[in-house]
Length: 267
Image (cartoon, rainbow, N blue to C red; front, side):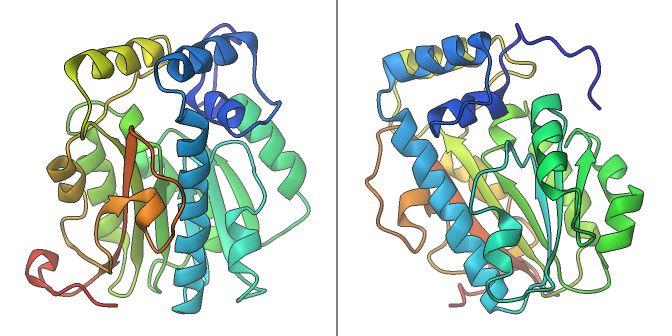
């Protein structure tokens, strides 16, 4: 939950806004973001690739009949938002946006306040019970029907085995036919020196940055069946953006009745 806001502490959400060319950031965010860009000049392209993945994933799930979404670690609203994309197919789509950054919350609430089918929840993804028990989630999301739960470029701000615990909490609430949308920063192809530079740039953020191997990211989909093309760079998930040296790996997977690890990759 948001408390003790300090604009001198860089925020991953506001750094991401800066990468995308937004203006809702502070000097500390810009300084930390520029440190990343200095060592990895393709960072802006990487952010754009990740955003394009989000749009394609929501388009795919809306086409598959999903009408309710929980976007965790949503970041500062950037058009097209999840509900804008989903409502191209389902005008009645319901979306809950979750974040704990006060700037994100202020902008999201200002933009979405007049829509009763949308909600902005102030919660930390590390407290998943707070999210699933929140009255606005109960009002908009029916967990006895398929739902899409989204962790787009946020779990690399969680240390150790926390991402698996968080995802598993939601998996247990999701009925078969629900979907997990996930992208996370990868350590693939990076030298120890490059990893150190990235970790140093995010060290001033509240939880730091934690890039993971492909196998570690794939393990986050345990209990789900990946749809084609599996876990790939965000620019290759049904898209063709310019690849970058630093990669974000992404996948979309369906909650099934049986063990996902033994299931084929459906189209």
